[in-house]
Each structure stands twice: as structure tokens, then as C-alpha cells.
Length: 97
Figure 1 (tube, helix red, strand yellow):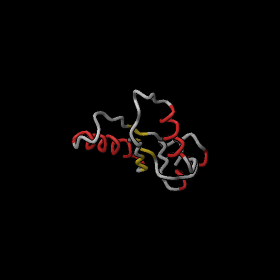
Figure 2: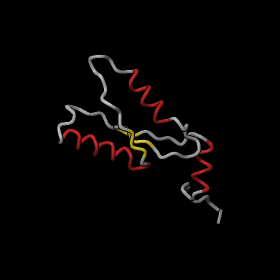
Figure 3: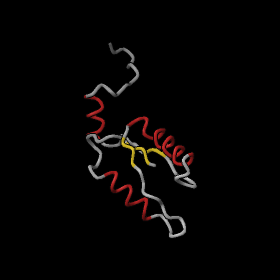
Figure 4: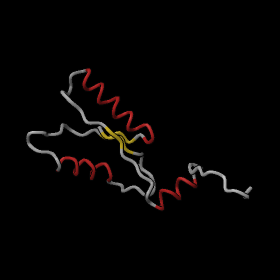
């Protein structure tokens, strides 16, 4: 279970597919991954992945699960988009009003 941000500027359109492809290449026949579930729900996606994994374990759909979230803000288009949407919060600069 992988939590990802929703589509936004700066993220590759095929991020989920590329991540699934990469994750399936690092497994061995002894440790084959079940279908990877992508949860593109933003800030809470990592916790939602953990919740989905817990549910799969409770319902005995899996013997074990791997869950986590991936996000990043290293792209200039992403930062511009965040700023344009009022989502960049910086501490006030001294002497600036």
C-alpha cells in the first residue's frame, strides 16, 4: 500500500505506474508482492496506506503488508503551484510588514 500525493504540477503523470514498476523489479520469487495498491490522497495518504494494510491483515487478505507514503517538493513547478494556492507558509521576516 503506497500513499502518494494527488496529481499536481511538478509530478510525473505516470508516477504511480513507474513506482509500481520499480517496486516489482526489486522483489524476488520468494518474496513476490501482491498487487500494489496506490492511494493518491495527499497529506494523509501514508496513514491511509497503513490503515488499508491493517484492514487487509484483520480480514486475513494478507499474511504481511508493507505500507508507506511518498511525497516531495523538490520541483519548481510544485513550489509555484503551492504558493499560488496559499499553501507555502514561511516565518515572518524581521523588519518586513
